[in-house]
Image 1 (cartoon, rainbow, N blue to C red):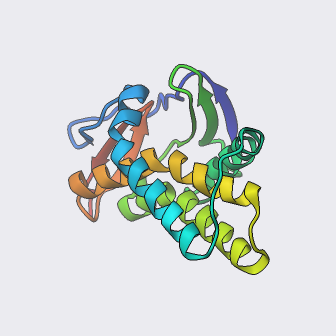
Image 2 (image 1 turned 90 degrees about the vertical axis):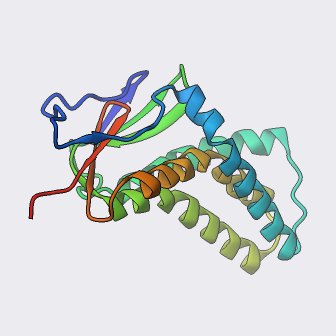
Length: 190
């Protein structure tokens, strides 16, 4: 595991040839965040509705919001990394942050099966949300946990956009691989 700031890692050993197809996706982080807005709306409505159904009225607090950001962002990225094929012990996993796009990220050098890639994208949203709701059901209202659930749903909107793009463009038995911020897929040889 390695750390990187203000740039996406570049796997110099990977040069996508004719067998690799690029995803039709933006490489501009601000455009990606704009394209993820429908998922942000759906995620926030869903999270708020479930909080309401279990009897919790969520109220934003600036102090708790800041604390929740500091807690959930590294945990969210760590969960992504746990689902990569080589886990955390690998030098092929990078944690980073780009100030330009205000985007934390985790990246992996290597091929990933399509369904594993989808699992990598969805795992933090599902795990943090479920654990948060279980905590709230067992122990009752907790502003910090509520904020973490809420902001994790916001933070996961680009991940949900990624799942949508992969499901629409990548065949079921394909593998994916990244070159900086670009994602490529191919059907592996039998």
